[in-house]
Amino acid sequence: MAADIQFGTDGWRGVIAWDFTYNNVRRIAQALADYINENAPSDEEGKMAKVFVGYDRRFMSDLFAADIASILRSNKIDVTLSDRPVPTPMVSALTLRKFWLGITVTASHNPAQYNGVKVKWAGCSAPSRETREIEQLIDANPVLFLYGQKAEQKNLTDLYQKYLMGTANLKKIAALKGTVAVDYMYGVTAGWLEKLLPSQKIIALHAEHDPTFRGLQPDPSLKNLAELKKTVLEKKAIAGFAFDGDGDRFGLIDEKGNYVTPCLLAGVLLNYLVKAKKLKGKVVQTLSMGYLPKRIAREHGLTYEEVPVGFKNVAERMALEEVAFGVEEAGGYAWKGGSSDRDGLAVALACLEIMACTKKKISELCDEVSKQYGASVYQRRDLPAAKPIEKGAFVEKLRKKLPKKIGNFKVAEVATTDGLKIYFEQDEWLLVRPSGTEPLVRVYAETATKKDTQLLLDFGEKLVAQYIK
Image (tube, rainbow, N blue to C red; front, top):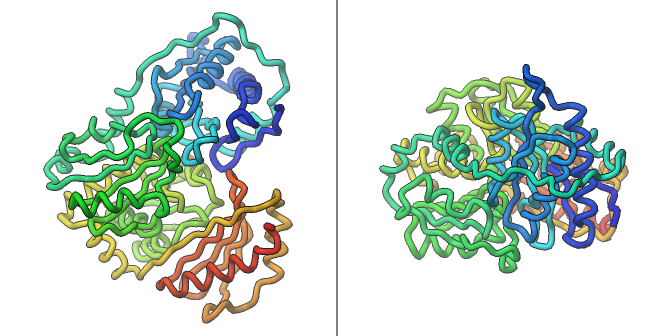
C-alpha cells in the first residue's frame, strides 16, 4: 500500500502490514538516501559523513532496519547498522560526534501493532524543515536496492554507556540505600540500569524480549503502571522507574506508590538543577506541560518559552539558543550538558542523584516543590476521533465557542499555536489538541486541586464532543 507518508511530532508511524510495509519503508529509505546525498558534508579527504541505523524490539524492526541500511549502502552512503536493539536516545547521542545522521526503526510508546521510523540529527530529532524535505523526496527517484549491498553491523553500546556515565554522579548513586523497582515494559532499555548500577539495587519487571508487549502498551503513563506501583509498595522500594518502548520517555512512582506527574517531576528536576547545579539559560517547554517550570523560571530570573507539542520543537531551541532546561508533558526531559533529546535513562540517573545528594525521598522532593511553587494537579484525557481532523478549522470552531469564564476561572489568554490553549489568571490552563501520532483528541488541564482540574477536563471534553464522533 503506497501510503501518503508524513512525519508527525517525532517521525513516521503506521500499523504493521497495513501502511507500515516493506514497500513504504523502502520509499522512505530512498528519500533519506537522496536527502543525505544532497546535504551530507564531506571531510577533507572527500569522504561523506557517516549514518547510523538502529532499531527497537518490535516485530521485524531488525529486518526493516536492515532494509533501510541496504538501500543507503546501495546509494553509496557510509552506513553502520546496529547489531542489536538499542534505545532511541543512544541513536541521538551517536549523532553528537560519530555520525552525521541517525535513523531508527521504532514506534516508541505506541501499541504493538505499530512500527515507525525516526530521524535523528545533531543529538536530537531532525527539525521540521528537514523532515519536510525528506517527505518531498519520497518517490522522487526509484528505490535503489542492489543485491549484496549489506551494511556493516556493529555493537556501539559502549559509547552510549560511557555517555550515560558522564551524565550523573554514579559514585554518589551507588552509596544510596535501598532498591528501585524498574518496569522496562519489554522495551530496549531492559538491562541498561544494571550496567550502570549495582545489580542488587534493581528489581526488574518486564525485561524479557516480547514484540507483543504481552498486551501492555509500552507507555509509562499512570494507566499502565499498576504493577510497578504494587511492586514498589510490596518490596518497599525507594522509587519505581518506567521506560517506554524505545527508552526516550520516563515515568516515576514515589516510595508511597504515588504516580509523579511529568509536570511535578519537571519541577523537581529544574528546582534541583537551578539551585544545586546553578543552571542558567532559558526554560523551554511544550504547550502541554504544566506551570511549575514557568514559576521556577520566574522565581530565578530565567527566560521562558512555550513551543508546539513534540520534543523536537524543544530540541530545536536547545540546538540554536542558550537553553538550560527543556521538557514535554509526555515524559521527555533534557538539560544543558547532555544531548538535547529526551533520554529516559539519563532522567532515571538524575532522580537517583538528586535523592542521594539531598538525602530526601521522592515524595519529600515533590512536597518541597509544591510548597514553594504551588500545588500541581495535572490530568489528561484521550478521546478517540472517528474521522480525520483538520487542525486549523477544528481549533477555530472551538475558539468561537469559548466563554469568558469556565466555572470560577476567568479566561486571561487564548493561544492557537498548536491546538487551543486557554490560560487563566493564576497560571491554570486547559489545552485541547488533535494528536500528531494517533487518531485521538487530547484534553489536558492543570490546577491546584483535583476538583478544579476535573471541571476543566469535563468542559474540554464537552467542547469537542460533536467534532470527533
